[in-house]
Image (spheres, rainbow, N blue to C red):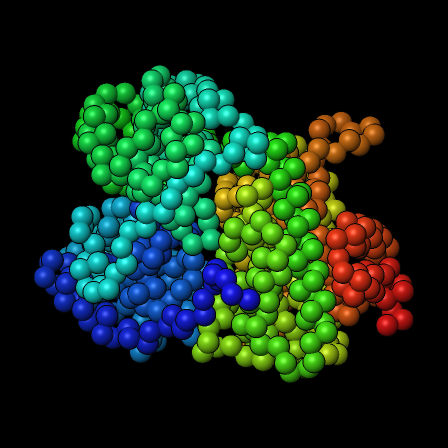
Length: 609
């Protein structure tokens, strides 16, 4: 098929750690620094960053979405969380950079244990929050050292082919899909500022900028963001400062009576104009550089939550309708893909071929704007790498007797999807079936959960882990993340995780994705997106909530050990499969419909396969 693809498979690992570290160390010596902190971040502290902010990947070869390198003149470490403990050693030059598991040693602990007394550690104030800088300061002080903000990032000085800053077109997100006019959103935000006694809000998160002003952009791969900031006063006109000046006329018209649009270059002068008042900065995304500039201008800084984040998290009726439509469209594409995989002769499918085929099926369904993240297509041992990204150098054939894990998603104008299915290739082992079924039981425990209003994601995270814990097993990532409405596939503040301390409210969309990973052998993850909804329970003494499952795709019956399931779990799976069949069959071709009928038969009938 001749079209632009959304994914590439170039090998990102450089194995040039020594040369690039050497160049950076020369720059540090020239600046009088003994070390420098290189986070995987841009000036908005985003998970997904533009190419010109991929400093960590350029320096170390590590391409994960989270990690921090600490480069000293005589040592260097890359600290990563549990998603990347297998990936990091594969990508970095371990002769020069030591991968460190966050669960064992934090960034701050490594700094305090390796920084020499009297040393000076540098950091870029646009890539760290005030809270993060406070932690660095304490870690350095523990070692008898100090930290210093460096306005000119030394990595940029030694990166010869650094990409230019993005400046993609900025377009209007239609009110019919957004579900609320900009004026209404601004009024709600101002009401929160009034209650908090704040005179203005500096919007530092591009996701919040996109939601508040009903705009979308193209500055980040796979996430429709326009990079920039906004200053939203409690009284008066907001001002947007966008990296791009390619603003669609209909967006300019829609905002003409509500806000002023300026180039990003004008932002510094606008911050300098905040000479009085109390200015809210978001704790999680506002760079410490913003805090310093506002305080230097004369205003006071109030660090706290950006009220837009909570508003954005609770989807309105139009956004929920859009999510359901997007998942129906996506379900048709995924069903066609899964049937196609099952029909492939043994040994004829590669990881890259699977990625390209799934993207093609989504594209043929119409309305595809992008994938929502690079597809994780891992066969056999590659499936055990939680955030594995296939390249031409790592691509392997899916072999008989293996498991194949494919985690993918799409961006449609009406919604964002994210789904993972683990498939048996040939005959799975009993261990594989046992582990899959335990993951499935945890997945069902979340899907079937009913809980009182005010419950947090942390309180239900253990539901997904209990079946694995009973066998002495665990997985090292959260059970679920928030998902946006034609925005980021990873959205906060909602999450189902040990760190998910935000109460779940109706309208929030999250993933439900427990897993199990046996290093060097296989990986298992099962993921659906779920919508928080109210639940009416006869005799209930308080408001109750539960989940609607949005994703429409069958589980692999070949991997389900019904002997490990109780009657309620079997009934839920059968009802879900019946719902998938009823929703998708009318839109499928006869051969795919026959395949779907087969794999969604009641589990008792599936035993007869």
